[in-house]
Length: 255
Ligand code: NDP
Image 1 (cartoon, rainbow, N blue to C red):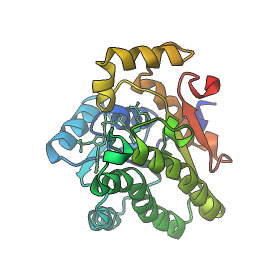
Image 2 (tube, protein in one colour):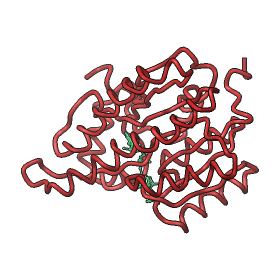
Image 3 (cartoon, rainbow, N blue to C red):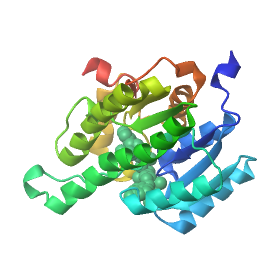
Image 4 (tube, helix red, strand yellow):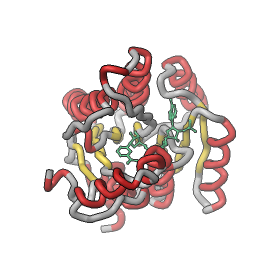
């Protein structure tokens, strides 16, 4: 049974993995046997995250690039081609959030959130899938959605639009790439304790609301997302395609 979840011999690229959920996904895939490629915008924090995983005995390396930068992404994949490194698993995790009422939102802020949370997944997955198709060995694309892939909240309109887009981009990838044995799925995390939510955790009204509205009565922890990521990256999910799995403590179930 455990062989179903074994990622030995696989290479996984996790974007936005210097900390938070991305680091947890990378740690989980590495513990399941994968060699992992980490990413973030700052070389120093990417290197620190790589060293953290290496110190645990995992195979890790990193590339600092902005996931909205198409040329930088192509350069990374070209370098991996030259080194004959085949990326088998991609987790499109990098993301940002602005909290601002729609009427006050600037176009540049809207665009930046769409580019970072949605367009990046297209650019990175396209580079990976082209190579997976050419190799003919299949692969796994895991896009990171959110509760907002399903339910809107006030003040996060571009984030919600991007995460809703992630859901249907994932379906589109499944529609086009399933015949090449590439499974494209998404994870929709609930409210998880990471830097992205630091200000919200410190806001007593928001903290109380999260706990009251969730049947689990608490925030989620990054490590509670690992099992779903390993499942979607592994042979255990080979006939699962175009799905979004919400890991939210039951929040959407009672909405
Ligand atoms: P964090 O803010 O804690 O971490 C974000 C990560 O993304 C960092 O590693 C950051 O690296 C990286 N990053 C940000 N912008 C870019 C960019 N342009 N290019 C490359 N890397 C970038 O976020 P979380 O861990 O909380 O969230 C991760 C993902 O999960 C996001 O897509 C988020 O929308 C989603 N999510 C999170 C939820 C939560 O409750 N935390 C709930 C639902 C979804 P650096 O700063 O070093 O560049």
